[in-house]
Amino acid sequence: MISQRFSTCGAVAIVVVLVLGSAPAAKAAPITLPTQLSGPMTVVDFNSLSTGTQTSPLVLSGVTFSAGTGGFNTINTTLWPASTLFPTFVSGNALGRADTNPALPNFTITFAAPVAQVGFGIFDANFLGNLILAYDGGGNLLESTSPDYLVAPSLGTGADYVGFVRGAADIKRIELVAGAREGVTDALWIDNLSFSPTPVPEPGTLALLGLGLAGLAATRRRKQ
Image 1 (cartoon, rainbow, N blue to C red):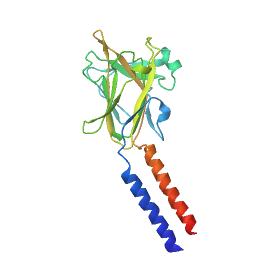
Image 2: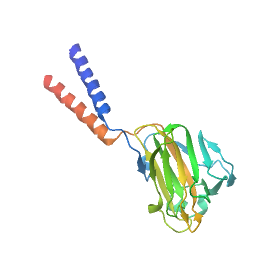
Image 3: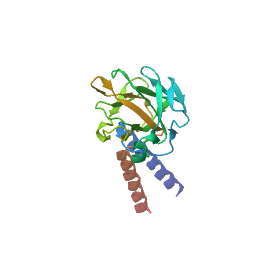
Image 4: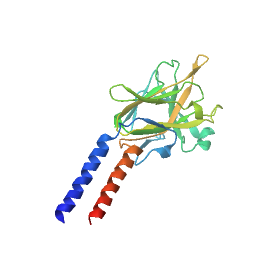
């Protein structure tokens, strides 16, 4: 009986290794809702900052916020309709700035250690060409997304949620690049930055693992 138990446990371990080893490498997946993040999150809500000008770089909860040119500006989003229309995206103070050079990042978010999940609300992004870019520690672009297609064009009413989830903690920094229109770039603010180093397993990996364990259970029942 003891040897049979060890045999079954060994078989389970082999299946786990084979399934996880054969699973494809995780690819960054853009998200559009905070509910798409899973597990405990570190959240930076910017409410500890006073409204007005902020110097760059700015460090909060181990995250470094750097402006492409110049400093930041903190606004109170409760003065705008977006905080009522999209309260899970923006609420209270938000950090942002306008950039006169769209070729440069509007601002950069750098994590002390790479993360696997990151998301944040973005306020009043109503120009075409706004980009959110995710990079690894080597400067390689992992994925990009844009909030444009979900944001209302009216001043102060538009808000969206953007971010990425991955199967490995390899996002070292996020860059926000403002879109331009008629020589003027969009003003972007972010709020409720949430992040975690905990990876999100791909559904296919979990399904394969479940099938493997179910098969082992069926085999054990037949032997008994």
